[in-house]
Image 1 (spheres, rainbow, N blue to C red):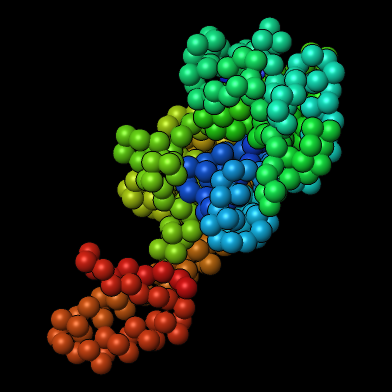
Image 2 (cartoon, helix red, strand yellow; image 1 turned 135 degrees about the horizontal axis):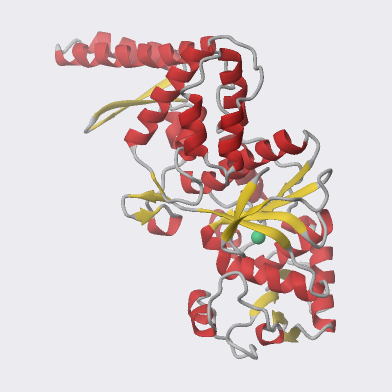
Length: 436
Ligand SMILES: [Zn+2]
C-alpha cells in the first residue's frame, strides 16, 4: 500500500488509483530556454522514483506518466530575440540538453511529453468553454480568467485574497476586472510567435497549457499531479480553477504531490538568484550521474536539500560501498523493507539506509534498482572510478613537472590527456578537469 502526502488534504493518504490498470500522473516540466540546474533536476528524479514505485506495485504497464515541455514563454521569446533566431532553435536545443542531463541522472523519459506549441487547439477549446460558462472574459485582445467567478479559488494554497494578490505578483492592467484575474490568452505583436484564435493572433498563458494538455492526454481527473513547492501558488491554484470550472466541478487531481527546494547555503537554488549549479557542470567535473541522483534522493523529497560538495562525496562513498556489496549479481527479489520505506510517502532516506544493510547481492541489486541506482555493473563503476584517479594522478605529475620548471613534460601530459578527451583548466585554486 503506497501512502502519499497530499498537499490539498495536508496529510498522508492511502494511494488508491481510480483505475489501477491506467494510473495517471502529470508533472509540470521544464520551460526550455536554458540549462537545467540541480534544483530543476530534483522533481525529475523524485517523480521518476515515484513512477518506478508505482510500476513495481501496480505493474509495468499500469502508469501513464506525462511531463510537459513549455516551449512558448516570454523568456524563450527574449532569448530568441537576443540570439536572433527562431524560438524553436532555443527550445529544441534546451529540450535536448534537458533530456541528456536528466538521462545522465537515470531519469527515464516520461510516457508522454506534450509540447505547448503543438497543443494550441485544446487550449483554445478550453478557453472558449470558460468564456461560455462565465469564468473568463475577453478584454483588449486578452482573455482573462475571472477569479471571483470561482468560489473555491484558493483551495490548494489556502491563501486569503490579499495574500493571493501579493503572492502572484499580479500585473495591474486596465483591462482586468479584478486584480487577481490571470491571463489565459494574450495578443502577439507582429514578428512574435503566435497563433490565430477567436480573439485575434496571440499565444496562451502558461497555466492554461497544463490544464488543456492534462485533459487532452490523461482525462478530466488524474491520480497524481506533481511539481515543485513553488508551483502551488499561483500555477497549480490556477490549473485547478481552470480545469474545475471547464469540467463542471470535476477535481483536476486526487493527489497533489510537491517536492521541496535544493538550497545553496541558506537560499533556494534559483536562476534569478544566480546561485545555480548544473548537472552539466558537475558531470564535466567527473562526477557521475548516479552519484548526483543518490545525492538528490538523500533527503526526503518534501524537505529542503542543502547542496554541498560533502554531500556529493558522501553519495559517491555510499555508491562505492553498494557496488562493492552487489558485485556482478543479477537482480533478484526486491527487499520488503526498501519497498515499504518508499511506499511510506517515498521515504528515500530510510530506503537508502536499508540498502546499506542488505547482505544478499541479488536482493541489493534489485532493491537499488527501485531507486534507479546500481544501474552499472560493479566492474564498469570501478573502472571509470579508476580513470578518474588516473587523471588526478596525471594532474599531480604535471603540477610537479611545472614546479620543477620542466614545461616540456607538463605540456606533454596536457596533450596526452587532451587526446583522451580530458580537458585541463588551470585556475588560481589549481587545475581542474572536465571531459570534453
Ligand atoms: Zn503545470
